[in-house]
Image (tube, rainbow, N blue to C red):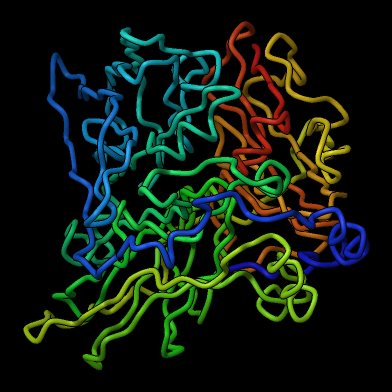
Length: 507
């Protein structure tokens, strides 16, 4: 995906101190389910329902109900969850570029919440951030024009400081935006047949099947991680493929876990898109790193007819091009053990059907997208991520030395301008950085151009320990001096602990 060269540099610089600070006592009762009778037999991959809404006076209208539910991740256990139009997660919303949509969001979960349209360019009052709260029993109805390239986006709770637990319990779903160009270049596009969404979420369960959240000391510092993987809410899923070309649109919907994805037999695949849409050209690779909030669009060839499994490991030293999330090698193993972290998962067992349709020929070029040019930027802003005493188990997280304050506007930008934002991460942990309102371009990472897989439109970027990333942002269309957008770490526990700021766009 990208050569994240500094993923371990800063981490190793303080590795010994970090390791000693992370040692914890006995795990709480019910921490793991592996020897406690909760089975997870393979089952067919659940495919989220696709909603097209209804058209009323030229406006496409969707109705969403945030609700409590009971889910059955295991045959012998009921799990209390939250969902949207269902018990866990929500439906996929199908929109088209250029149309106007209205989304009626009703809240019936028993506490205040929000729904943020992650990755969409829209007025701040419709963004669904922490200022657009929905009290229990109330309905919020934002309306906006869809101004996106075709891509897969998503929606999720953004209720400060309850984003982590609400998303963990299930308040999230997908958004598919279509446009004329994307439907005419020959990519697989039959939803649920050869165009498959995968929402990756690691979860931790108690003996009774209940979701455990923040039950160990390291959860707040490192972010919440689980020892079981849900894919579209399915444990141990398989998919029967009816096409030799299988398109997988993958969202890292986890609270904090970073995945390195590859196929069990080492076969290559082609990345065709990232957060904000198609890449300029297809990029062939054997593995890819995906941080919380990021999305990728890949196509895998199944012409050989062999069963294959999409798998995930913790990003390694080699795969990161000189650094890994846990440092790789011995340090990575030590840190993983100290954190009680299971690193390896089977994501999806793919079983090619005997009567598959033939593979498609991928185009040589996907989208005309000029390289980012910072020459017209009117200003450069610097953002330094901070963890303070969090590394020792206490204190607040911050950006530029200040934890999130809902009453404080941190930055003010002018509509119709471009800016360079420099994000620096002096901490010993990686942080996925997300900016609301805009799809940005990566200028460079630690002084080097981004790899081809990150050369497209992005709204979330992984900042390695000791890393520095320069982004080019263009602020168009909308201004509102009273309604801010957010920028923040998309490790949801870090976000809830204060690693977030606010900016307004003004005329």
